Length: 240
Length: 353
Image (cartoon, chains in turn cyan, green):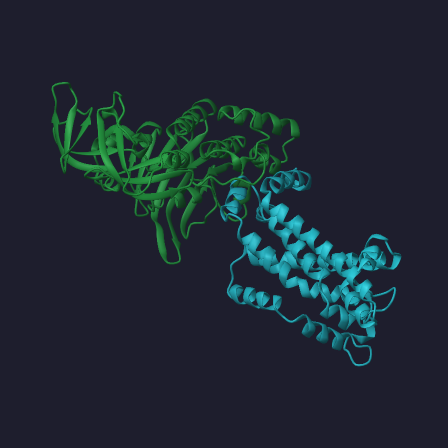
């Protein structure tokens, strides 16, 4: 029982590599999801149009799509033999995992960020405009007010991505030195009869997830921290 | 007198509900124009049209001698600003709030710092720059909102019920700032209010607005002296009761409003009158206390309403009177429904309309 902890603390190069790759893949997926999710959330949060409710319902439904199903569809799309995107040669590469995880967490980013934007006092737009802001500047003012919520949307998405297994196994497999990740490693190493490595990877994964949740809770509970830090950030960003 | 803004035959509808109906009005340069009307009468919409935040459904709007059109609205909006009834603040420091409009106007750091400092001084919040704006008291927040508007030196300043939810101290500071800004800086101000006392004392002219239509417009003293039907209808909405006034030997008058309630007033009028007491002028206490106030009534709390930083209470003293208190006082006094309380107000606070 001591062996997994020894592995955890010994900074085994392979385990370190798997951990860093997991952080990179999940971070990239979250960044991509945020990149295309935030503009959609902004559009949904700031405008009222026919069908908005339906779109939000569909996005919320997508959050609950089984990851195995998403992984399977992606596998079919990226399959090198018959997949329509097979010619890209992405299957069983970190890029495929990044795309898969990005698609997985995009609905989470959109849903949480939309809620954060909608939760901003609707009078902020009128306030900005009466102080001289153009439509775009007023929208930026609203986004700044929602920054805390948008940040939490990103953190939650990262949290979700790093713990993902279904999509990872389907499109990434477990290629040594290429697509080994914490979640897939736990599964595969157990299959290979190396429970110590599985336990060690599990401890690392849980520690990471715990740290992220701790950070989220700290941010949520210490509104003052968010608010003052946010004001500093905003000052640097633009209100300048 | 120069006309700063003019609305001609303006109608505004929201979802088929007509909020303003064929309204025409002029705002003269340098004046304080009071819009007096009950809640829902269209005051805020009229202010938002003057702030160029809402477009009229029908009619025309002229500002600074130009007809407001899509092509010039953004440029003209730089010369008008509005302070909302419900205080809206960015979740950042007081400095960032007050300087927001200046930064949009690309003012230099030096100019911004100077104007922010000056505006905060005017509203009595010197040294508040680094404070978190949303952590200030309700009155201080409203003063930050006013300072933010003042930094812009706009030709037109629109104030929507600026003292509606404030305690008397903060209300008095804001009223003084409004006077100073108008007199010292020559800023034209349009002030929406349902506070009769404020309407009588602050503006140079008042316009009565009810059901989306402007009734009388004129000098406050003239309008109040005429006891117009519009005014009476508006006043009938709260803390106003009709009764018979009887002049007493000491020069005051007692107005019997029924249910054994006699209100001491400083009026010299005899006979049928309508009395009005502003909620801000009524002191609420758990026990009677010694004071020069002539009106002290025992009652029970029958309604409680959250009004932002304040709590609005309905107190049954034979007739229902609306009073307001800060949330902190509400908690400290352990107030609740059916709790016995005392209402105290001066005879001079009772307005005869």
